Length: 112
Image (cartoon, rainbow, N blue to C red; front, side, top):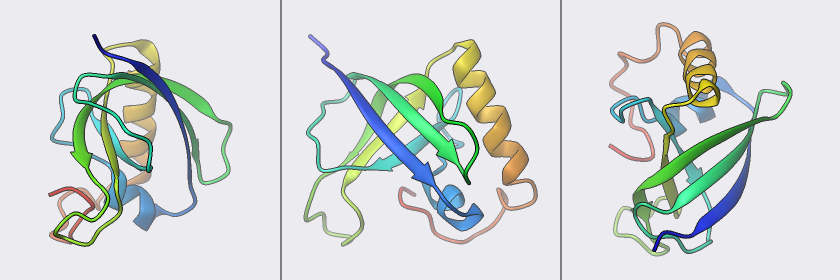
């Protein structure tokens, strides 16, 4: 059975948002650095603050896991797919707006 968890994430810059955003997930998603242990499918609530804006609560599910000590040497964490909800749509709209023009970039992200 899937567990529930809460992750708090404060994104301070467009570059940080770009490396965390997961546009290839249905409804969009974010890679959240964490050392907490999750399994694929776990339900998670992200408490997200974008560049000092008010915090929004986004429900989602774990769709990606990068364990500590992974071969790429990047941050450990989880990719959260936004739920098909008003909050998920609000978050995706806000992120795409902030990243306008950057999403076609070839720069690496924390996922693929």
